[in-house]
Length: 282
Length: 295
Image 1 (cartoon, chains in turn blue, green):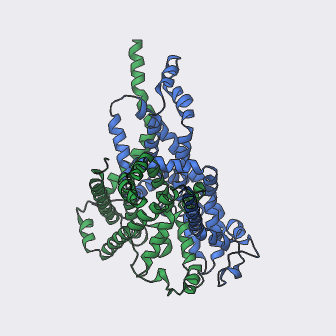
Image 2: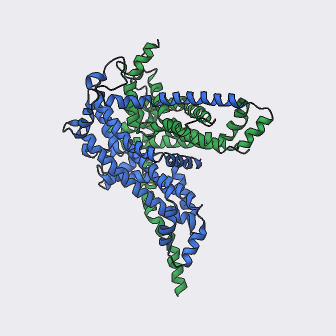
Image 3: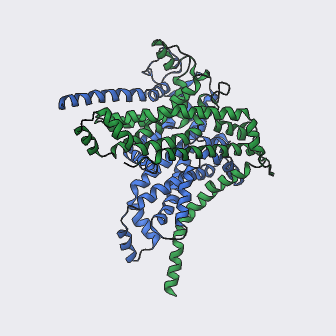
C-alpha cells in the first residue's frame, strides 16, 4: 500500500511538472524570441534556443531615439505611478481601517458598509465620469491623474484586508500604551503598524500589481506619448511595427514582466497569502 | 472642563483617521458612480461644456444600437463559455497539487506566474504564439495533423482564442484560492470516509465538492464580474474583429466615449446597463449558492 502510494505520488509529481513546463512555454517563447536575431525569429520550425543570442532588441526599445524609445520612458512612468499608488493606498487604507477596527463612533457601520459595498462597483462603470472628473482637475496625462484613481480602485480592498487583520491584534498592547500616555496616533504608528508588516506587505504587492498592470484607465487618461505607462506603450508599440517584427515587442513584454517577477520570486509566499486573504471576503 | 475637552478631542479622532481615505473614496468612487448615472440622462459629449437633460433618450437609443446588442451577446457568450474552464482547470490542478505532490511551491508558482503579467503582455504573448504564419502553435498543430486556421481571424474561433488566453492568464489566481479552500477541509473527514469504505472519487464528490461551495461561489462571482468587463485581451488580440465577432460591451463603451462618437451620455447609459446586469447576476449567484453552504 505504502509503496504503491509512493510510486503513485511520484507519477503524479512527474505529470504535474510536465504540465507546469507546458504552462510556462508561452512565457519561455517570449523570452527566447526577444533574444534572437531578427532574421532567426521568423524561422520555421520554431527554434527554442536563441543562438546566436543578442540583446539588440532590448537596446532598441530602451534607448533608441526612434519611435520605440518610449518603452524606456514608459518603464519609468510605470514605476512612478505604481509606487505612488502603493504609498497612497497603503497610507489611506491603513488610517481608515484602524478606527473601523478599534474605535466606537457614530456612522462606523455605515462607512464600513459603503466601503465594502463599493467592491461590487465594476471599474468600467465609473470610467467615463472619472475621466470627466480628472479632466476638470486638469490631471489628464499627469502622474497624479494615474496615481490617485489607481489608489482609489484598491482602497476598498485595502480597508477590508487591513481591518480584518487589525481585529486580530490583541488590544492589551494598545491598552498598555494608552496607560503610558500614548495618544491614538502614536499607538497607530508605533504599535499597530509595526505589528502589521506582513499584511501591509501583501497589500503593497497587490496594489503594485494592479497599478502596474492596469490598461484601460491609462489608455484613456493619458494622451501624451511621454506619459504612457508600460501596458499602453506596449499595446501601441505593436501597431508601430510591421506584422512580423516580434523581436522588439517581445523585449518590451519581457521588460514589463520583470519587476513583478522579481517581487514574485522574493515574496512568493506573501503574494499567495495576499490572494488567499482576499478570497476570504467571498 | 478638562474631561469634556478630552472627550471632544477623542470624539474627533476616528474621523481624523478616516478623513484622507474617505476624501479619496468619495471623490473617486462614490461621486463618479452618481455622476455617471446623471450623465446617462444627458447629451454630454467630450469637449461639450454644457449638457442638457434628455430623459431616457440614451437608454432608448441603446434599444436600436445593434452594435450594443452584438457586444452584449458576445460578452454573454464569452462569460458563459469561459465559466466551465475557469472553474474546472484550476480545480483539477489544485486537487492534484493537494495530493502530496513534491515541489508543490514551485509548481504553484509556475501556474501562478502568468497572473503577474499585464493583460497587454499576455495578449502580445498569445498573438505571437497564434501567429498564423510563423507562430509555434501553428507549426506544431500542423505537424500533429490538426487543420490550422488563422484562429484570430476566423469568427468561429476568435472568441475561443481569447478564452484560452484568459484561462492561461488567470488559472494561477484561482488555483491559489482553491488550494486555500482545500487546505481548510479537515483531514479527519477523509479518514472517516476511508474507514467507511469510500474511495477517492466518492470522497471527492461527497466531501471536497460540497465543502468547496463557498470557494466556488467566490470564484464564480469574481469571474462573472470580471468577464462582463473583458476588454484588454480583446483590444490586443482582435480589436473586436473579425467584423464584430469579439466586440464586447466595455470595448463598445470605450469606442463610443473615446474613439468614435465621444458621446459620454450613451456610454454612461451602457455602463449602467452593464452595472445592473452584473448586480443581478451576482445576487442570483449568491442566492443560488449561499443557502447550501452549511455542513
